[in-house]
Length: 393
Image (tube, rainbow, N blue to C red; front, side):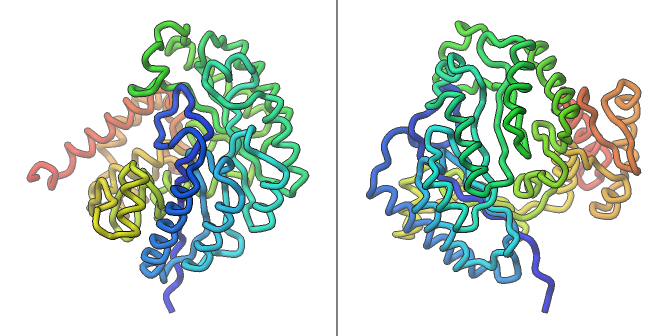
């Protein structure tokens, strides 16, 4: 019998109490339509059945419920979905099972039900410790609710809690951001995600962004470096650009994305990288339901087979997001391409403090992370120029 391959499962829950001012993820704000929820659960069940048959050689070692707001969706619906996953897939007994939550929809009853069902990790969207800022962002909670949610999760047996924070918020100073970090660290989370606010076209915030006194790019960079410093001092390792964890508490599911491992996404807008193909579901719950239940409309917005040479570019782009970095030996062995053209780009940047070499792996420094998009673009240009097959395409 062949050894089972690891697989991650992502389930998108596109329901929220309300849409935040900055959110560009696919979700439906407002009350939950019971018929729509029931149809969605049925569609997911069909999708699990169809896909589970194709994953007989895999063992699911991570399950992630994202959104939207899975906690708003309710414990009973989440338990029903997870039970169906366990029925259709081989799920490891030590699988990491995460659900995202907003503080306003976390209750003791929800936490007890999910913990008893096998959920063992909560990712809580705190974003700020200042209630006036939370209100400006359209967040449906206050900071005290976040503190109570963490306390309740501990009491219900959750010993792996991740907190999300945002910096670069309206009128925020670096000193205020430092105060927020030190305040939130009193909750003693195992994991922290710190994201700079990005104002995306199509969101409400985009329409009035000039009127809310957003920090400059330089100010955001200072806030980022301050987070790296404070979290390191507090015992958190930066294992990805925006993610920090105590030893042993890295997000195993999210690492699949950054390390090029296989995962399957279910629900509208969910992406997959499975069996050599990458595909994404259309961001439309009604299309998803109809496509699964009536089988008369396609649910995918894109699907492509990824050649090995393109995977080489992804290896550089994704691994450099993490503290694992890239290995010349690994690169040349897996992709049959010379590493020397990349080294010509890396060495001058290392002299500028953007790269460091540890155990024959090149990694970005925090200063390198700040300009990672430009660095990765230069590396991919070097890859393209050195690839004889690319010149023929």
